[in-house]
Image (tube, rainbow, N blue to C red):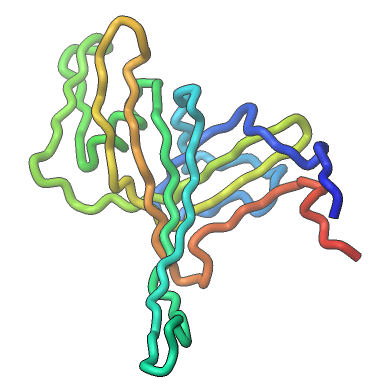
Length: 188
């Protein structure tokens, strides 16, 4: 098969969405994200990293120097991003079970960060665009399982670095990816 530069994609723009676990995601690329899905806003210029990995267990036999079989033992999928909009949705995602309260009418707010937060599962949406090509990925069950340090300095935006781990749901999929990319068309 020949190389085709028209099939090279970039994620020129996009969004990360969080919704309560069990929220209904858009079924196609044209339906809007409903009110349950909160857009986390600006991300750092690093964009979003998506990782997918599998682990296998080798079964060895006395009569063979190489494995005679491999068994899939786990599938892992993560999304990593750094939110640079410091707003209620990003702060409370970074600090699970935290609560923002108003101290002084419309001028001072307080964030109470719990010492022992419980698990916080979300539905997670990712959308990215390259010209007319649109992609959406939905993770029905995910949790922010890793957080980077919050750096405060004059030369960069304050960022909330987070990694979402995808969990299996009742469906056999760990995530669903929709695309209108013509390069995805199956060969006839």
